[in-house]
Image 1 (cartoon, helix red, strand yellow):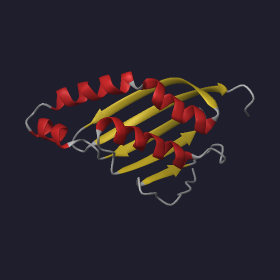
Image 2 (cartoon, helix red, strand yellow):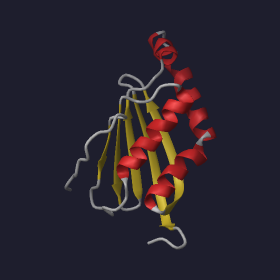
Image 3 (cartoon, one colour):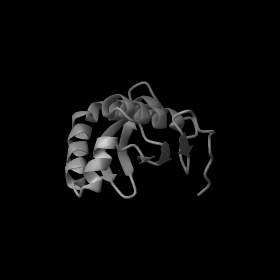
Image 4 (cartoon, one colour):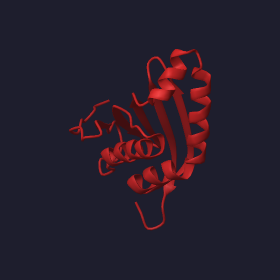
Length: 136
């Protein structure tokens, strides 16, 4: 699969258009997810890369755990950090979906999120449905 890189923005976001609609602004998805993290976590990731293939959008975020979260992880309390992040992401479910819905013009039928420490990574996964009315 070919990959087309767009220049990173100040959010250090990039995209991968492997086998999909080239009109979808993947950098917009990366930047939107980064903005959510900055607003609600108080710190955004160091980089974000969006991949879009068929009905799947995956955003990989590197870095971004807050100093408090890093301290908890260092003290062996990473489970607390991961649980808190799961709860916040569940509470913000609609905000995440809206970013992808607007960028792709398709409904988001499922949103899943995973967090990992050491290394500090987050992955946001979106399964797309049919095009929105009046689109595509």
